[in-house]
Length: 111
Length: 115
Image: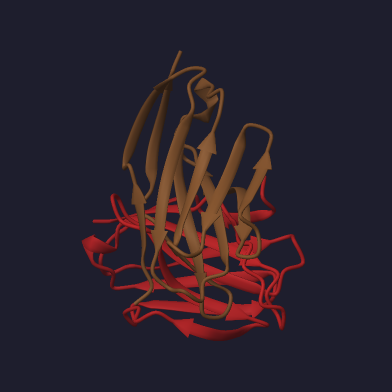
């Protein structure tokens, strides 16, 4: 069935460093790939997304890249700040109006 | 805030109790979702409603019963739950309807503990 693998499960960086989280999906028909940030006690918040007709998308310090051939997509955060510390989830679309999620990456940014 | 609210935020219930979770969206969306979030597992899709009709039931036990009285409200009725049902239950909404749209916006969740 549909599956998304996400790595790493935890990531510790120093403030100002870059962070990269990678995901691999299984359904070649997937055409929408969002990233969510979940802070403690809150629901997941959509932070950036990309569609299959685009290879890269950037929004200030965050960017997402997509390689449809390899079925890989990645989240890049530059100049990390302590407030970037959270759990990040990738997801891929499948079927009609549905998403399958990765297992999450806990990002810790140390001052 | 995302425009999706959930109540209660925390719930403790015994295995013989009956309770309901409520979700309301203020985004004018037509599709609503229930997810279960357990530690170290991906978000599990439970139910999908589009235009107030259930379009997905992801092999969820009958002790979970959803209800969507209109496009803004979604309920999850709970009865005779098991301790393994303890989790964060998340509601989400998307544009839905006839448009095959995927952007989903989540509420803050209800932390459920079954004792």
